[in-house]
Amino acid sequence: MSGIQGTRTHPGAGDTSDLKYPLGTRLREALTEARFHQLFGGEEQEPELPAERRFPRLFGLWRLRARACSGTGAWRLLQARLPPLHWLPHYRWRAWLLGDAVAGVTVGIVHVPQGMAFALLASVPPVFGLYTSFFPVLIYSLLGTGRHLSTGTFAILSLMTGSAVERLVPEPLAGNLSGTEKEQLDAQRVGVAAAVAFGSGALMTLAAVLTALPRSSPAELTISALSLALLVPVKELNVRFRDRLPTPIPGEVVMVLLASVLCFTSSLDTRYHVQIVGLLPGGFPQPLLPNLAELPRILADSLPIALVTFAVSASLASIYADKYSYTIDSNQELLAHGASNLISSLFSCFPNSATLATTSLLVDAGGKTQLAGLFSCIVVLSVLLWLGPFFYYLPKAVLACINISSMRQMFFQMQELPQLWHISRVDFAVWMVTWVAVVTLNVDLGLAVGVVFSMMTVVCRTQRVQCLALGQAEGTELYRPLRGSHKLLQVPGLCILSYPTPLYFGTRGQFRRNLEWHLGLGEGEKETSKPDGPTVAVAEPVRVVVLDFSGVTFADAAGAREVVQLASRCRDARIHLLLAQCNASVLGTLTRAGLLDRVTPDQLFVSVQDAAAYALGSLVRGSSTRSESREALGCGK
Image (tube, rainbow, N blue to C red; front, top):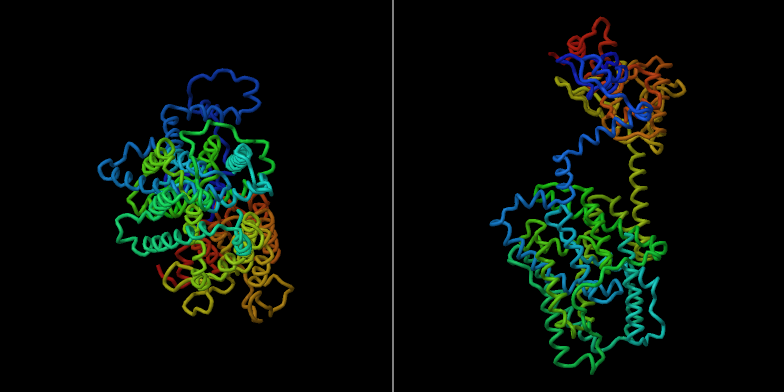
């Protein structure tokens, strides 16, 4: 039984380490390298340079870093930055290769029509969707840590990118452009999309669709209706019979082939003016630095795109990592997705991220590791190098239908609202506020409104938390909230409180009011009102209070000063204040705020049990040991 002893300088073999009692190191003299050699001997040191004598700590850290740069350290760093060096030597070729190959080819087949379709959402030619389905996937396979993650074109990012492209490079109102003018317009739009990717949407409303219907081609409307009639049922079959199908039905691929053959044999492009994909340039684009002059103009678009990219990708990676019992490195994931967008922008790609649809497809097809991404790249590469001319007669209306069918799941999320209301009404409110903001404003501002509203709900919930009075469960050393329980032991004059929320400027007032009520530190009235309850009578005056800070995950300067002021008020009121289970970060903040000027290290404890035993020893006359305190409380041995 004791608190954190600040006078302990040389712990014995059985003593507790200073890591557990951080205040114990405050009074111990630092053992420098020079002092070590002076006490225990060693090699003679060379005279230090004047700068090194002036900045010993800086040069000491530099020498420590230099020693860490060994061959083993360099290899470990290289493995962390290039994950294949870590997982490839342990790859189970016989067990995993077939699954990765099948999954990679399956996802690659989906990437081809989906990439071209999402390129239209980004307001760039379809071939740039193929580039975005190749380079980011290749880069993430080399840098990513998510074994089941599939990256590439993403509908939301394509919409957000298209919004920026349409705003910065609008199409002329006349609409009749020559071939050269069309190429120049596409080049400008690709430059803006790549600049957005380098630095990191627009939503249809029903009114815009209805307005555009009179200008639509009857042939394209017919193609769209037939395409949706095929794609939507196939999507539903894939979802409902996921466990029974050996691999999902490639509805997009079938639709692309049928539409291309139909358009070619019927000459729909010349007879009914159906827009087609046209010639896909073979090979790769020449690496070109994006138009960095556009960065100031697209910074406001790049920031939300970057946030959405990392949030979606990191969430998907974490979900599948937990499901298949492995870990991911969040910092490496940030580096992988950042490098994926940065490097791919040099090849005229637009922003990309992980997607739920292709990730689920990869897992269902048997993918095990990042090697599946390389097989996916092979499929897209074959289209870029050899199979591009086969997509010449593909109607763009089919690509638009692929977009609609891919995003249908977003609209079906409305069905989850009743369940969300049942689970958490606060999360329901966040969902609704974000949805309304996105629809009425735009994607960027809508997401910003959603994030701010979500943060406000967190602040409001932390301000509503109350201090919990604890009592000891009979026959045990466990302390539980009282709240009407009659089987918990209380000692007159002893108050044990738990504060289960961060202590910062937003909660300091609630913290102060709760402590004043429990400790009777108000205006001296014998009858007072609890902050969230009716008027009750105050029991015997508190002589010792134990604050359980295990739930205080962090404290800011305002919260730390509130604790220091509480310590002063307790000292003036002759109340002995004990702090228990305060983590190192919070303890450091309290110390810097001057807590040790109000309390001694003996008043800081690692556990509530130790603090309560110490308090009982000071309350019960003649009992100063833990065993006597336990007997006084009636717990037995």
